[in-house]
Length: 474
Ligand code: ARG
Image (cartoon, rainbow, N blue to C red; front, side, top):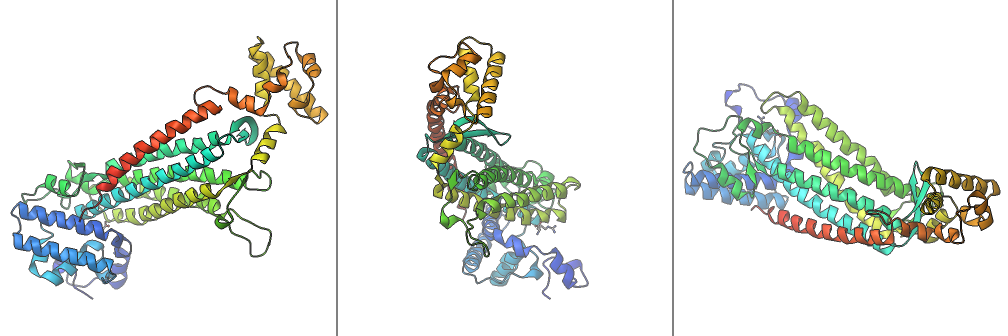
């Protein structure tokens, strides 16, 4: 068993099982880049503040860069005995450069170090997620453009309600992703606060320069309370919450995808390359991706619940419980990224069966509101018009036909206000075109929504490019 970096006050080595239980290296090694970037900034600051010599600083930075190269070349053995990524790297550095390595941890604790690494890591991942959201939005816009004028029934209670444009329906998901993007911008801001210099909890006796470190690592601001700096996990909870909401959106879209490609709906056909078959039933083509995204939503929500529960009873400042922030958030990051990525692909590969969605509108009663609105426009109060249209529906059902099949005479029997133009007024195109209120489903409104959406994507891309340019730290 190797010597612990903190072994001085101990007379026994750590129990092997305990050692394994408390180590985090298996998962926190993901943050090696951030750990090294943070240490380089710290060492540079220590030298600038005359806390270490420039020879020591140079040796430390060269040693850390070598470690980065080694890790990326797969030439670094991570050791459970050294607990976590911080001590694995520090030990290797000291083995390589001697005493100077032992000076790196001056004015620093693993408590502020791990906080720093996690902030940097989340910040970078949030930027990547933003790029994926933008691509998914682009996929939605492409699909909406492609099927811009396709008419389908819109639903409430999963019952056909009113005719809408397929593009309008898809753009609702675009709108959700706009909010998701904004939520992740908020997460970015809260991850973009620099904790280093808090020490273990109370600050440090050395004359450090925290602003310098913040600038070197492109942080927008610094923590102003050292206890808060080491115990804040709000940005983790916020990330998991933004991620959960995003997954809920993807899950709703998944549910619709699954319904739509079922034989019962047959509104869409998914690309063969995006589906799987059955080992027993030769005819099957299953929407597994959508089902998995729907399923994985549960685990991301689970990580959010776990993190809220971990933090809720913790006294200030650092407690080892906080190490539990990592596995959940790493898994959530992987899950969210993969889910958005595959969903953009599903959308791009999907075909809408226009004849079927059209038939679903024609051979049903989703134009009944338009029948009532027709009478209202001729002067009848809406409540009465609602009742007349209801009667028309009743008659049609009795006869086994639809509203378009009732004759003018039959309509006139219900109300003298009905005229020649009634059949045209309840045709799907007219129903759709008529809903021209702001945000409605009309061709004109959808065109407007598409235009606004393209502008939003442009603004988001600009924001993302800026964020992405700040993530290169070494
Ligand atoms: N591996 C630890 C974590 O992830 C690093 C901080 C350890 N600090 C301590 N005082 N034991 O939280």
